[in-house]
Image (cartoon, rainbow, N blue to C red):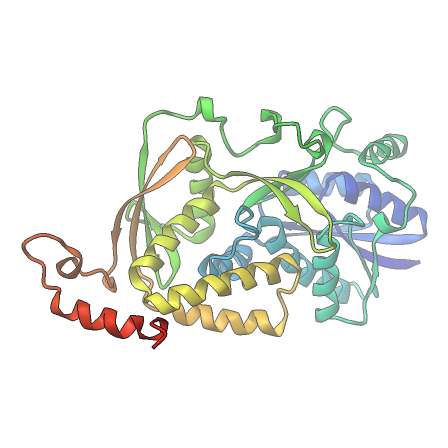
Length: 390
């Protein structure tokens, strides 16, 4: 019997994939990565074995995810189309890496995934897997089977007695990890529909968020967030704590008409409280420490970095080269940023760094001003020369 290693999340798609692969004569070994998903490891194991898997590997990859995937993206300030902090996109190359490792361990020449035939994740999984091991055969059931909608998948699951949580009443496609939640499908496909509160799991609605602001201070060391209110935290724990704090204040919701890699525009709703808080603090620290030219170039770099992550090119040579450049920009990025959180707003309250380029004596309009005003005219004369037409 042929053996296939399936990237298994426990959701509707991969649950149906497991049964579909078994019906085609495969022994199915599941691999599940715990990146902070909605399903517990015990729940995943129970679901997979009940659905017919011969074995399941479950790995807690939250630390690797935070340190080796989230942190580089944070340092790069990479945001896709201004609203997406790449939570799902960042998890895919990590899952692909371990999927390939399990396939090698199981001596399987096949891997499979449950990604949509018109989505981004099929690209991310397959490009990453091909780079890591071009010899593997990849099976994508959603590109092959006759099930044409989530409703037909739900009916298939019921017929096969596959344990699922998705219903016709709430047919959303949800992917969750510690960096955020991605929600699509169902009533969200109608652009006239505002997301209902049943869509969200990390954030309170705006009307239930407290009216009193909360101040938090995030400490950084060389671009890495290391403390909250002067208390040291590892990155995973810090993200989890900030998700709770930000969620309480209704921070981190975005609703995006997004350009997928395959050329389709789709509507995606996201929750990422911790991510947006850390991005805001990190950006403010960069403004304080980095010089003008580096800041300008880094904005261009951030756009390209986000594109590479979104398109599944995490293991590409260009991405590795950009990481080296980003790390150089972070060497002096140490300090503290105090934020005021209130009613979905993130407001900067205080900034400090031993490497600050802000000099009050040069910026002030008060009596302690040390800026040499006589330099201004000469600077303007030289600066304007190319545009005088003489």
